[in-house]
Image (cartoon, rainbow, N blue to C red):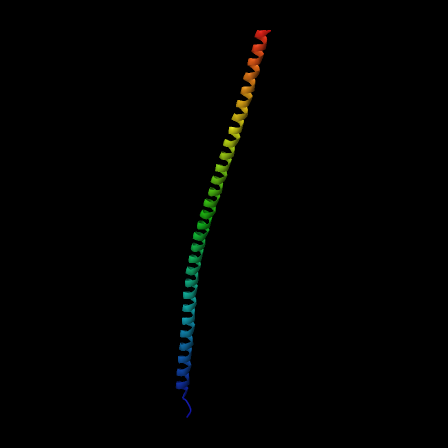
Length: 110
């Protein structure tokens, strides 16, 4: 049975409408996927910024701890050096006093 011209035109029109709906749906899906991808990208960037900040804070705390340790070490070494200088100075003072006393005694007995 042969289809009439009207039936053929009707089928063509329905096919065009169906194709138009498919194209519209594809465009809508594309736009939704782009919007979703942009949102995901923003979240990734936001998380990367948080991670970078946390990493910087950890590095800063680590550096502060190292500096504090070095400070304690330097202070301890300075105390040891100061104690050695005081002991050496005291020895020199004792020697100087002994020398002055002996010189005084020598000149008073001369």
